[in-house]
Length: 495
Image (cartoon, rainbow, N blue to C red; front, top):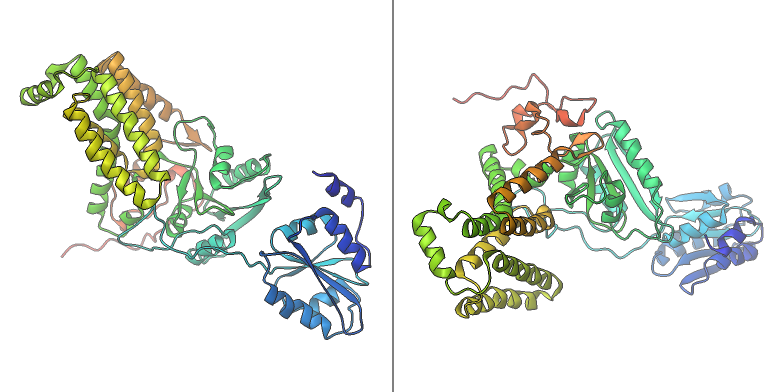
C-alpha cells in the first residue's frame, strides 16, 4: 500500500467539498482523473470525481448534475441519494474505497455540508460484442460466447439459469489491478465445501495483477506444476450452465472471456458442446474419434521410431519394404529424424499463431509443401516420417484443450522410444497412467468415472446415451440433489 493511501486512511471526509476533493486527488494524482464542479440551486458546491474514458459523461450530467442543480443543497447523503436519478447509488466515507470506486469506472460525488460521498454506477467501457468464440465453433447449438466484461458474463449465465439458487460471490484479487472475480454455483446442488475452499484460495491470492483467468487457475490448482490442466475451461455460457447443473463451481474473472470450472475431469475435454444437440450415436462416434486422435498424436511417432530401431518385424511386410526404401540414405537416425520434424512442426505452429492472418496462411503453405518436399528431395528426412509427423500434428487438434499436453507427451515418448524402444513406451504409458490415477482436485479423481469406476457416470463419458438415461447428476461430484430428470418421465418406446 502506498504512502498516500496510508496517509489518507488517517483522515476522514469533512463537510467541505473542496477539502474532500483535495483528499481524493492526493491519492488519484493521474491527469485522467477529472473533477466536474457545479453548484446546487442555493449555491452549495458539488464535485463529481471520475476517470476519463471509463464514465458515461452524458449520464453524469443528466442523472447527477441536473437534478442537484435544480434543488437546494441536501442535508445528508440519504437526502442527496433521493434527488439523484441514477439507479446504482450508495454512500461511502472510506477514502481508499472511494479511490477504488473511481478506478473501477464509477463516479464519486461530494456535496458541501455532507461528510459522506455518494458513489454512482456510471461505467462506460468499450467492449466487443457478444459473438461465437473462435475456439469453440459449433454447427448446432447456441453461438453466443463470453466477453471481457464480468457483469456481462454473469448476466449471460443468469439468462441460462433463471433460478434464485444461482449464487455469485464477488471477490477482489490483485494488489495493483484490483481484479473482480465471481465464484458462481447452484445452491443445493454444488458442494458447499468445495465452494468455500475455492473462495479461501482466491482470497489468499497475493499478486500484483491478474490479467486473465489462467492466473487464477494456477492458484486454484491442487498440483500447480502438473502437466495436465488444473481446471476446466469454456468460453460458452451454455456449456458453463450445463456444468454448473452437474454440480461444478464456476469462476469468472473480469477482463477474461474464459470461465473456469471446478472440479475438473479429464474426460471433459473429449466432450463437445455439439454432442448434446445431435443424436447420441453421432456424439459417441465423435468422442471416440477425439480419443483416437489424441492416442494417435501421442503414440504414433513413438511406435514408428521403436519399430524402426528395435522391432521392425511388427510391421506388415509390404509397409516395411516401403519404409525401408524411403529411409535409405537418410543421415539422421529415426529418433533424431522424428524429433527434428516435431520441432519444426512446433515452430511452424508458434509462428502461424503470432503472425498476421494472411501471412500465417502463406507461411503454413510454405512450411507444409515447400520445406517438406524440399527436405525429402534433399535426402534430409524420409517421406514416411513427414506423413507420421503431419498425421500426429493434425490428430492433436481433435481435442484443442489438450494440444499443449499432447505436444509435450509426444516428444517425450519419441525420446523414450528412441532410447529404450517398445518397452520404454509401455513403461512411460504406465507412468503417465499412474500419475493420472493419483491426481484429484477437491476430492474428485481426474480419471473419474473410469478410475475409480463409477458405472452411472459412464453414460456420459466417452460414450453418450440418450437424455432419458441421464436422469441423475454425476455421482462423482457428490451433489446434494442427484435428480435432474423426473423419474416419471420414461423414454418413449419405438413403434
